[in-house]
Image 1 (cartoon, rainbow, N blue to C red):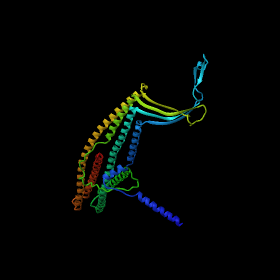
Image 2: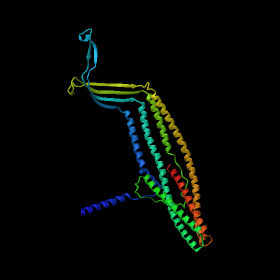
Image 3: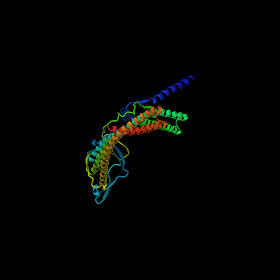
Image 4: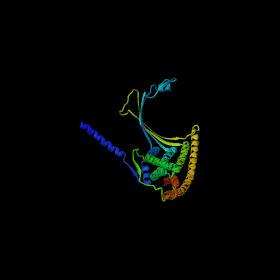
Length: 438
């Protein structure tokens, strides 16, 4: 019994340690740190690494034409009925007759090494070049994905910061809205206001609750989606230490944008398509090869295999082969025409993508400039509306204005806050795309 209790206690300790290890919090302090971790641990990145490794092996395999191919063989044959060859009877002292003679042995064995070497094969050379360019294509695809990964990571990072900042402001707004509800109800009891003011105070309070819930949803979704990009487990407690102050607009500045790396993928696909059309055309070129055989033969009338002296006779040869395609039923011609069409398609896709990228980049910079001005204006308006709430609070306490004016000022402040948060989110989302081009 004591042993059972001790065993259970050990299991509980191990389970507790394992749980603590799984839920160890992950704290990140900057966008650069988050992006670096995403590039290192993102699951898709590991797939690209394997694809690059696979492309390298394919390239090495395509270079096999430069080396000779050597193979060993052994075969035995039972000549169930030897071929008959008619010969003149005079050869066996039977003039005027025909004798049907059989040559060879019933059992034949062959063993040896076969050697083949391509001296000139332009098709194999181009296939090797295509395989080499496929490595570059996969690497460029990975680079393009890293650009997209940076964009997604930065957008999630900024959305988390906006959600966290919005929650902080919402808590302050909720405290003020709650006090206005209590104040309006008190004034209603005193007869100094009406039910409309109480209803408006409750509406403002509910609007703050709604904004708070939406901000919490934005924050939670950003955290969970960022875990996926970072390759973290669902139980990981992720938090960001950086704070975004929506009152400040000093961090809004002009930034430069690099080239769109996805265009390099289309350019590389065009290069490969061009090589493929050349490779298909090379099917009409002659091929020159060298071959040789180094082996031995054994002939027997009875079943068996001997290894004594004289049991095997040498059989060796060297050869040079030239293969010139003359007519292949127009198969190679149509394949070549098809590859030319594919090359034209790749060229059109590259030009279209490059033009679209140029237009999108120009629009992106214009949008960033517009969002910068809009966000500056909305930030100033937000600060002014917040100041108006404080001023109206002081006027209300002094009896200069009534409750309705005070509540309307708070309502306008909430609208300005939502407008500014929306503009700030759009600005930071555009900035995330620009930052992904570094």
